[in-house]
Length: 99
Image (cartoon, helix red, strand yellow):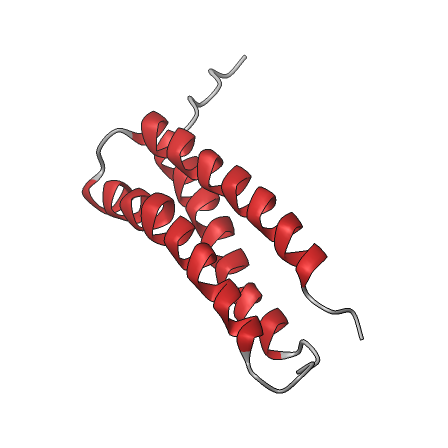
């Protein structure tokens, strides 16, 4: 029998932070392809709450991953950020016109 390798929490934290970062970048693509509605460009205001979530949760997570500190806490911060993204994104999808 071989010994199982322990979980590498730093890699898990990096995966969670990468998922949040990729979702944040995807939101720019989605908002850019929203029908313009009245042509005012107000759909771009959705970038601000999403950017605040990214700045509050994922930038510190990337910093902690880079310096190699508190990997379990970093996972928790990243998961909280993903939950915050899900809540805000669900609200924004109700506000954005479909066609």
